[in-house]
Length: 366
Image (cartoon, rainbow, N blue to C red):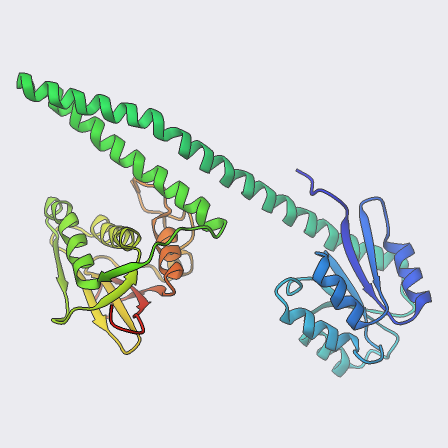
């Protein structure tokens, strides 16, 4: 997939002859050159265009190339634009060092060798093309996932209805085989529905459109509900699941279902990766301007090399029989951050792991 339209390159120099020479060297059928006579003109162009490379003359009146580079690095749109400084000055170490400090990827000294300039520019243009192609491929993937996930719900509902009818028939006829098959169907439907929900949530997170419906809630009741929902799974693995809650009520403005989804992911993961005899504890703590929730376990803990990838989409940490999409913690982080909070993981000093998140408390009692 090729990006639409030409790639844009910005050149900035206060001397017309220099701009003309650079433009002649760089312009081609798929490269559009944007010319600016000053730093101020360059900033105006950067507000309107995404550029793959910027060539900045160091010596310019009013705003020199270093000052322009610092302003570019401070703006979200131009923060990651590669910058090559062009200068006629001597190659003194101090000036070169300042250039790299302001974000330069290279220096070119006048008179410029056309072959060297073209080679360096072509390298950054190729990197830009690959970046654009990757972004478009990721967008197409997310769009396909969203459409497929949405369209899977209708046939899945038919399977769920058939399973429910089979269960009713098995109950009426006291047929254990029908009841067993109906149970298998229902478990498969539940798992598939969770996977579809994860895929849809991932698509909305990538587009920044995750829906959060804030309402008045009480934090302790949320945790109690989540604990009760996971007790059967904990008992099945012979894991002790408990909670430690403060005596006083903790009001919270949040999306109740989304927060229950967070607890489901964190508690479910702790149960999944702990062996029989382990303990999982959910703690709720109150601070001056936020509440903190910790899901702690006495399991194997988290490898040090896994921490930086823990909240990445599709990452499983090499675990066997993952039984999911690998999106749980990625979605959990998105929900917490959409509430204005933050989440992190750590290993406990006595063994096991803890995943903690904080959410802001309402400014006034609910």
